[in-house]
Length: 230
Length: 230
Figure 1 (cartoon, chains in turn blue, orange):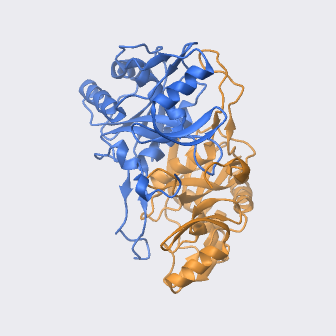
Figure 2 (figure 1 turned 180 degrees about the horizontal axis):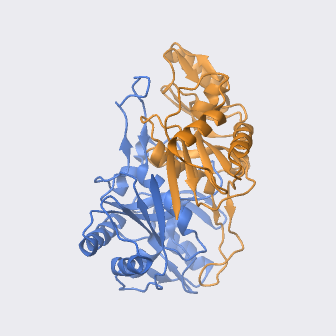
Figure 3 (figure 1 turned 30 degrees about the vertical axis):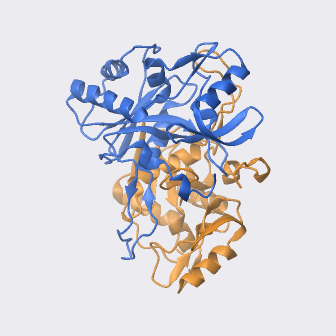
């Protein structure tokens, strides 16, 4: 059984804030005690804000420029939308630059090194709680071919990113082929079910997923040389 | 708070079996009573088997032919892999034809009309339980740009498929743009965390997601005319 608990009651995050400390306090107020194996999913927005990744963005032209600045390669363009590869390697809309849930006249960039951000938050949460936990930093990505966005993992610490089942067998004893489960993305998607864009809930605890490990967000990025849709 | 409960203990499904009845029985044995708002996620494999969608597949050549037969359009090809659009409109590998977790010498096709399959299962589950539930039929899809597969919704009944937040406002009062959450896909992904490919658990209950609605799987299919990655 897996339980997903929203972490509500965080104050508005500003540059220099200690997100792990704020989460710890909100968990305490909600009466949630972290236990071994818990995964804390944090939307990148508050991590970016805490890390000072808020920038001035007064116009659509500013926004377009920021998205290009944050991109290493533009894959597609339509109207104001670009689909590009970020400097981290993620393929997403407008390089993850985001104008929602930020103060007017500003935008928020993705964290510079989301795995490192996740790691730092994890160390703090583990020190405060005494539990061995994982941390996933999530963002909301569109997909090719399918309508609607889902949350995915852009920063990973203390959890597996991909579960490689190649070589294991199915219930008929046949070897599974090409079966690699993007568990960190599935956890991010699951957490989004209690977070929601309009609800002001920027973090959640996923309990019971049994996904401890040593993944990195780059495990989830397909090598461009092997990608059929660039 | 959302809870995800695996439905274990289903017998091997054969053509003509009543999947809803088997799920009801397994729920009873597990002591799980469905309540209003629960979403029952069922992997398509057992639905396809019950609906007689098991076919002879003796060789890789058979498999390639089946995948082509089930496709309306091939988008990419590499070695034995094709990425195609199924007759339902889904874009996935090998048109969803699957040789894992099936008897040797056979393969399983997707249900012919997964929304209808979901609807039928839902009516039976509601009659047996007295609760108003949703049903999602899931499959495991790869993605462009990202490593690993995630479960998505290919059949939907009694739940929303996409939550359209356009026009609602963020916590700063700014209107959210381009925010449509693929909630049915997020629920399918969440359920996969307790199902797993090798574990022989073909269904799960997702409780507390508050996603009642009237979605269809086609809500999740992007209009090819608007797709930048075909």
